[in-house]
Image (cartoon, rainbow, N blue to C red; front, side, top):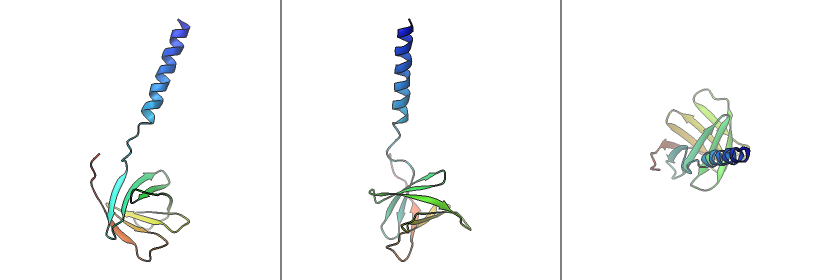
Amino acid sequence: MTRMMTIVAGGAVMLAMAACSSVPARTGSFYECNGGTKLNVNYVKDGALVRVNGGRTLALRAVPSNSGSSYENKTGARLHRDGNMVSWNTAARTAAESCKVIMTPF
């Protein structure tokens, strides 16, 4: 009886772990910028994870802002969110791009 309970408990733990790892691949907010850049942004506790054009992902930390929310990293990437609009800039670009939320099907 004890062995059966151990097997059942182990199976329940494995199912719970599998459920946690099945997070949808397409999560977060999607933006399309006026310069053609597409962003997938996941806002986390103290920052944002930004996937650029479906490729590289950048981790940005929250920084003080007078309005909205601002995030940046040490390489010069900067995201500023104010409502449904964001502005996106990198060290390689001199002017920020204006970006708007887009709806994407799952």
